[in-house]
Image (tube, rainbow, N blue to C red; front, side, top):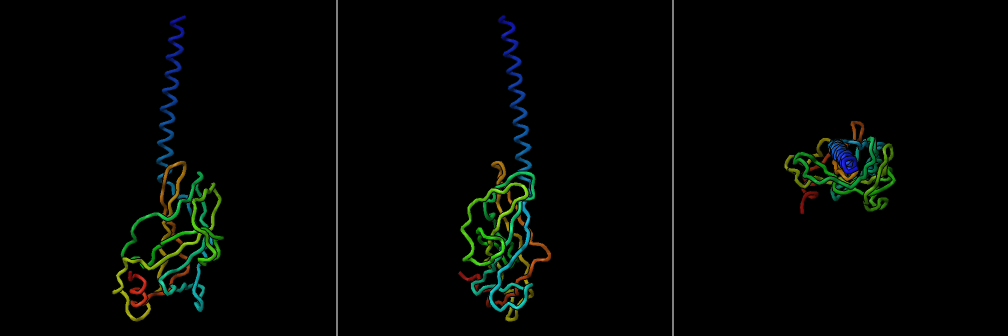
Length: 197
C-alpha cells in the first residue's frame, strides 16, 4: 500500500510539473504575441476645420496651432484589447504636427465640445470606438524652415496609441492613410506663435 501511495504521489507530482511547464510556455507565447501584435486600424477619418476652409481636402490650423480629428479606432486583431490612450515619446524634429491628446467621441464630430475625457475602453475583436484626437504644431519643430509664404500642405503623422491585451502592454502608431486630407501649410510667424512657451 505504501509503495502504491508513493507511486500515485509521484505521478501526480509529474503531472503538476508538466502542467506548470505548459502554463509557462503558453504565458510566454501570449506575452510575445501581445507585444508584437498591431491590431488597431482606423476607419472613416473625419477632420475638423476652421470656418472658411473652402476645400474638403485641406484642414486649417487653428490660431493656437491645433488641428482636430475624429475617427473610429477598430480592433482587427484576434484577441480583446483595452485602449489605454496616447503613447508617450518624442516626435522627430522635422515632423510638423504631433498628437497631444485623445478623448472619446462619436467618431464623426471633430469639435472639442463634442468630446468626452478619455477613459480606457475595452475592444473585442471586430469592435470599434470613436475617438477625438488633438494635433498641435510640434514644439521641437525648427521654424526657420518656414518663411512669410505658406509652406506646402502638411501630412498628418500617425496616431501613437497604447493598448493592453491580457495584461500585456503594447503600442501602435496608426497611419491615417494616403487618402486622408492634408493640413494647410504654415508660415514662420504661425510656427513661432505655436511653439513659443
